[in-house]
Length: 186
Image (cartoon, rainbow, N blue to C red; front, side, top):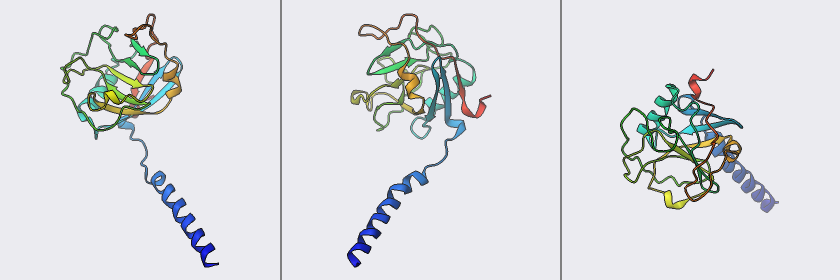
């Protein structure tokens, strides 16, 4: 009987310990959540100002200015990532009217659904472009700034038209229909 009771108690404590992290999670912060509407549906991105405050602020500023509306997913590589955010030229060579940002690298790994800032070879050259990971890619870890995580709608990112060739350049690309900070959404 004692052994049975001890086993039951251990199982109950284990169940409580497993449930505790789920209960400890906080509600999403609408000031740090983006709604990215694709032709296929809404992608919800939880931003990480704790990791990259300057990059997160830039994304929110540009979003509020309508910069990302109708911007193409100009570079999409199946099994790797979908890149967008060139509201200037639409081909991956442009940026915003604001200066480039200094790198804010972290130890958060680039896994499926992670959102990172695109940049040129200079680590301090991120501006407006960002990418969403299709799969884990350790070679990006500590080399690019993580700004957030897709919390719902990854199935819509999966549907974005893929590019061809090694560059992933997309002809007649899918576009962001609209992007909003959740706190401002109508």
